[in-house]
Image (cartoon, rainbow, N blue to C red; front, top):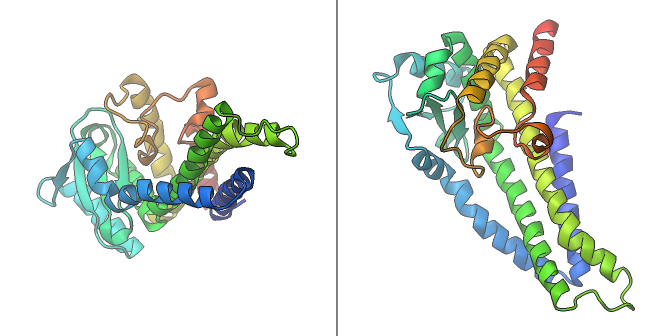
Length: 283
């Protein structure tokens, strides 16, 4: 199944969950109120995500004179992708990682850590930048904002329903499916929404890997970089990483072992590498 189609299906399921909760609440007013709240909560994230996350990690802007090699890589790939040159930033940490942010190609920023500049070759950096620019080209900030809005509304309604349970909502035995409906709305739907939102994030990572590999014309550049980044992050995790921004990074800055992988914003590195190597084999 294509990544775009899968993302569309997952967003459709989130919308379906929201409509289901509307039925459980007995009307559309509560759903609309929750949806408006969720939109307001995520509006700032969409429009100002670049400023917020760059400030959170203390990123410093770079130019052609301060980082000539990195600047030349981004400039080359931006031209190849026919998008404006994004702003470049450096995060002063030895943990190797990178991310892109910005609501569209005209308002994009790419940030790298000092660590990634030290351990990756020029060709590996090219693979990483290709991946990050693909997030910009694919407008993944918009996709993640829509998913966050829908999931946020579902979780908000779930909270209202849990409070409603405390005060007797759904206890009327004559109301068909009252208790069962309340259970779905208050507990199961919010968990499902969270898992779907994470699945969308993982799907967008796979898509950025594939798009970036096509942009650089060599999937192995990114595959080699991912091996280095995963090993280095296990030895030296990013201390200031926040769960709210973990999905932005090219490799998960947070631990995701065992069962916690189910709740990871990133797909397994070994699977990402396998797919990239398969692309290289078809070339």
